[in-house]
Length: 365
View: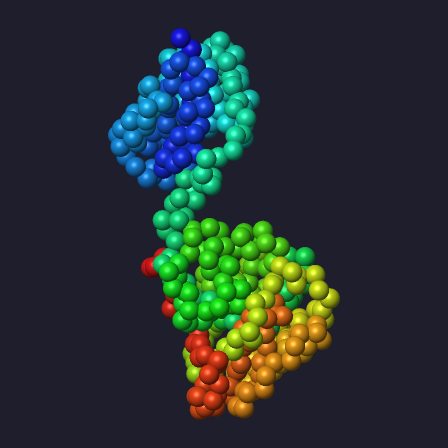
């Protein structure tokens, strides 16, 4: 009889674990699964397991491909299974292709006469997940805000970052959820970052993986009126009460979707973008709607120079620009007086009011 041994945390069992157990069991006649006990998990991961040890043991024992379940309490990182492994002396130690502690395990196998077997990656039966991604999904908020950007956009894309540059944006209501999305798709409001956050994914990394910037998930997660330092990763420069913007913002759907990833490398005036960001930062510091409107106007000039279609003029509006990467999506309009926005909303059926969002807290969602 060939005895097979595998080990891991197996903190939240998922289909990837079952596939690994199946493939390991196929290497012999008897499969022993070892999982790190609560004390060791705390020592190595600095957290308690999601399930008590006895529950985890019962679940793994119920799997048809598993013949024996043991716990590991070894204190050596990467070898928490060592004491019970020495006791059982199995024929095979089976690991995944990305085993991080191969040298230690190979040495242990050579000492005890066991064979170290590294399984090649096989196509997953389901989309791969991990314990950390499952926990993130469970902790994901139910609703998040989207955002409008005033100035400095594109300076959050790592390859276009400028030392001393600023990105200024504001989270907005109404919010969105997995079941309620009261906006158009691909609209320049940070929807892809919001979608990643709602699904328990790292929204900043998700945006960077798309080849775009991090400003959307940064302000969606932070909420409020924010100034960010240009760079490879989000770094909050300052945040201020956004209530002075209430009653002054509106969105107009341009009639076509926008494409941020496809616009990253278009030639544009980054000097003027940087100037607009600095001007908007002053507006935030002074809580000046006028200065923020001037920064929005500078940003719009960059967009016009980039050959975007001129936006409709709306009476009472003091500034306008395409939201996000432009070339479609929503256009942001600022109004100097609340009465002017009210009048514009009555006159323009496609115009919709938005308000700043300061209260969202992912920990309370």
